[in-house]
Image 1 (tube, protein in one colour):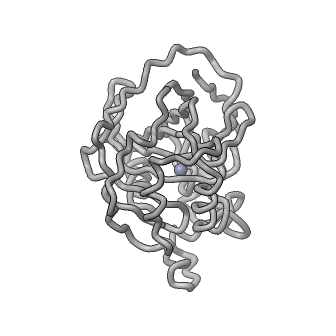
Image 2: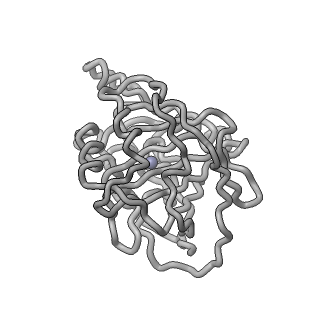
Length: 255
Ligand SMILES: [Zn+2]
């Protein structure tokens, strides 16, 4: 189990290089051969690869529509993000991902340290809050030393230009390929809202292999983003990159 999660963490950290898309050839046996529509869309992920079965049969899948909250007096997430600077950006064909070097930033949660590996974007948002779907959602992916994952989700909405995103948006790689060094400094903390209260639930990766056991921490306060900024991302991706919400089943959502 730990090994599986560790591999999932590595997959997330590195991203999945879409050889098929980049080369224009169909090399269907590759694990990266999945998408968001048609024959390789989310409803087919579970049968695209023997390793993707959890996408179809898992019972703790993400994203979800967060509702029916349980009052839990959740302790604050201890963000150790100060001066945490990203070093590279990658267009992996599924999203734009921004990577951090080892030991740059972390959160403290459940008496454990989860190191920040990367963040990336979905448009429209994947998780919904009480039936509300936001324009975009950023996922800050953290892993502990055993490879257990904790994802901080930041909703993005509002219509105002987000100045913190301007430099990053200018550096989006036009084509899906390997990582590029970031030219302008970018700090993880600049993406976080002032109020960091959150909802918590147990879920999964929202992309194949849909590995479960992921701690989801969905911040209640959204950060601003303009329609133009959303459009730049969506145009580059050429398609929506959100997995549809999954059944909640027996899970609870804490707040
Ligand atoms: Zn994500």
